[in-house]
Image 1 (cartoon, rainbow, N blue to C red):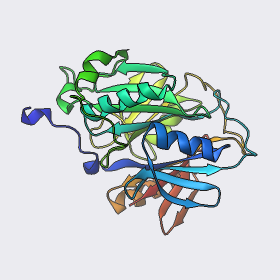
Image 2: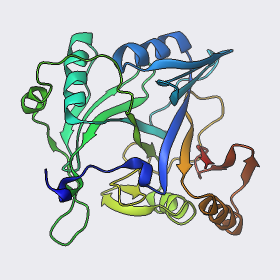
Image 3: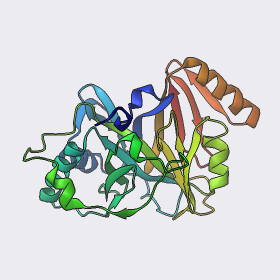
Image 4: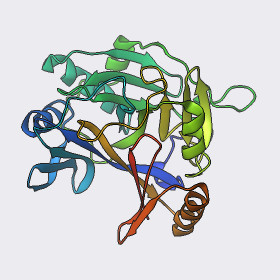
Length: 287
């Protein structure tokens, strides 16, 4: 592998995803799914909640309430939480494990920047499990990030496992990105680009992909199921918040100022700053 063939180091990005919080109706069933299928481990537990992750690093916070209404897929909210495998071999080992688990697969795609598989948890929350390609493969001749949705060569992927078996979510795995359903991509750009300061790394018809530090995307928003959706109703299961780790404290101050100028309410506390996007998803910024 040449110097140009390096893999993206998420810790160098000005902003990266920390943990995702979901509200669920059946906490036991959903928690068991993520532990069994994705290999996450309990990091912390409390009344009607559990935090799952790898080692001591929290990745997924689940809050249970059986009185919640089911998530309506036409509403704004979560499209998928994308779990990033450190290597292609890790992804291949997970694919073999997943096949044995007998969980329905919703899709498998070659996105040029990555190889990805798609599924959903028991309450319909979308999941992507993926591995990145080297950064050198991401860009076209003019330097722009190229993304596509092509068939995934599963046979070739599985060969990269090299006979090794899945032993749980890798210690250096992470949530690489979160893809959202929004009501309008222009309005989403106004929040995620203009307020949070993310770059528009790529566009699909009906979708914007927001990157930080040159990554293909830490966040995305699409209207494929949720065109013209308004703020999500209270008391509905699904996405509650996305945590974004901001490398420089000064960037949080700048985001605060932009939010205030644009009329977005924010909450400051010891953990950082919380904003809500136009559809009610809380964005928790911490340093």
